[in-house]
Amino acid sequence: MPVHAAYRSTAGAAPGSSSRTTTRRHLRARSIGAVRWRRWAAAAITVGVVLSACSARPGRPSASAASATYVSGPVAHTSAETSPAAPTANTGEYDAVLGQSSTKAAASSPTRPESTATSTPAPPPRTVTILASGDVLLHPQLWAQAKADAAETGRGAYDFGPIFAGVAGPVAAADVAICELETPVAAPGGPFSAWPRFEVPPQVLTALKQIGYDSCTTASNHTLDQGAGGVTRTLNALDAAGLRHTGSARSAAEAAQPLVITTGNGVRVGQLAYTFGFNGLERPVGKDWMANLIDVPQILTAARRVKAAGADIVVLSLHWGAEYDHLATATQRAQAAELLASPDIDLILGDHAHVVQPMQRIDGEWVVYGMGNQVARHANPVEASREGIMPVITFTEGRDGAFRATSARIVPTWIQFTPDLRLIDPAAALADPDLPDSLRAQYQATVTRIRSAVDAYGEQVPLAGASAPAGG
Image (cartoon, rainbow, N blue to C red; front, side, top):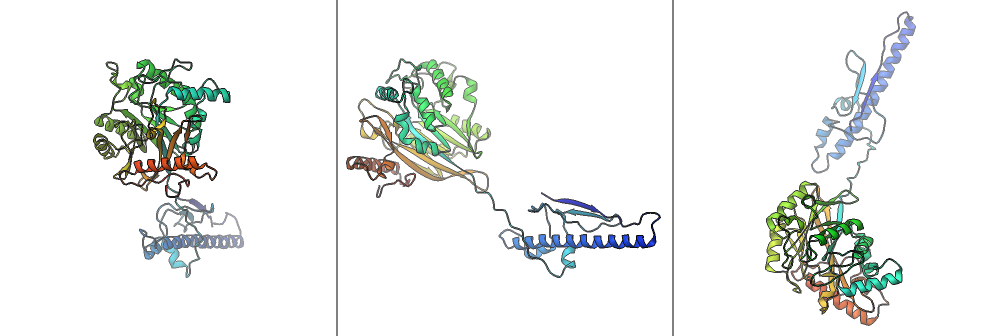
C-alpha cells in the first residue's frame, strides 16, 4: 500500500520580529529543509537499491531501468516511518508519496546505502485432501453386531462405532470425507429389513459422523426401496446426524441446491451423485428430482451449476458397473472419459460392484471405478466382497487459482467376520510386530489383491501413510 506523508515548513518571520530573530528562523528553516531533503533522498535511494536487486530475478526490469525509476507503483514497507519528498515550488510543502517516480536521488548522492529490506515469501499454495469409501451396505449380521456392541458400551440400542473404529484415523485426517450410503434407513426402533428392499438402523449415521465423515451420497439402486417416505426419512436422519448429502431430494428446490463444503482453509468442494437405476422401481410421476439417474448431459449441466455456485473442485459419485467384476465396463470407461473432459468435473468416485475396481488417470484427473464395500455381510460372501479401498486424493491450488490433483493414494480395508464384525486397515495392521502369523498372511494377501485390482490399468497407486508392508 502506498505510504503518504506531508510535511509543511513555514520559513517566513513573524510580523514585528527583529532582523536577528528573523535571520535565525530563516537559517533554522533552511537547516530543517536540508535535513528533510537528505532523509527523502536516502529513502528514495534505498528503494532504488531494492528494486535494482529485484531486477536480477526472471521477469523483472533491468538494473538500469530500476535505477532510473526508484519507485513504480505501491511499495510495501516494514517500518511505520515515512520520509518527506522534495519541496514543491512556492508552497514549501513536502509530498512523500512513495508511489511516485523520482530520479533526483541518484544525482544528489555519490553512494547508495545497502538495502536492509527483506522480501516477504509468497504463502504456500492451498491444498485439500478428499477421502471417499465404498458401499455402506448393512445386512442383519451387522446390526446384530451393533446391538451386541451397544450392550457392552451402553450407548443406545445400536452402536456401530466399534465396527468402524479401525478406519477412524484416515477418515478424520481428511479435509473432506465422503461416504456412500447404499440403503434407506428406518425409524430408530425399526422394523428393519435387508435385501431386496433395505431399511436399516439409522444409528449407523451417528457412527459415520463420529469417525469423521462430512457427507454421504444417497444415489444407489436401493434409493427407492422404501418409496418417497424412505427418501424423506433417510435425508431427515442424515440432517439430524450432521451429515451433508446429495443424490436424492425431498423437493425440487432441494434437488436444485448445490452441495458445496468449505474446508478450513477456504477451499470449496462441490459434490454430485447419480446411479444407473433403481432395481426396476420408478420415481413418482413428475418427481424425477427425487433421485438422480446417470445421464451424461444432465450431469455436465449440474456440474457447471456447482462450479458457478463457487466450487473450486467438483467431485462426482457414480453408482455403476457390473457387480463382482474387478474391471470397469466399456460403458464406465466411456462415461468417465466424456465426463472428465469437462472442466467442471475434477474427480469421479465409483460404487456398486462390491469389489475393488481400478483407478485411472485421464488427462490429469482421477476416476476410481469401484471402491468395493466399506461394510457389508452378504449371505454368501466371496472373499473379494470383504475388501475395499478409501482413495485419498490431494488437490493443490495453482498460480492461476485452479485446483489440480497432485497426489493419489489408497487405504485398503477388509471386513473381519470373527470373533466380531470389524472394519480393518490391513496395511496398518501389518506394521504391528506382534501381529500373529496367521493374520499377517491374511492381511498381506488382502493388500496384494487390492493393489492388483487398483493397478490393473497400470497406474501404480501407492498406499497412504508409511504402513505399506515390504514388497506389498
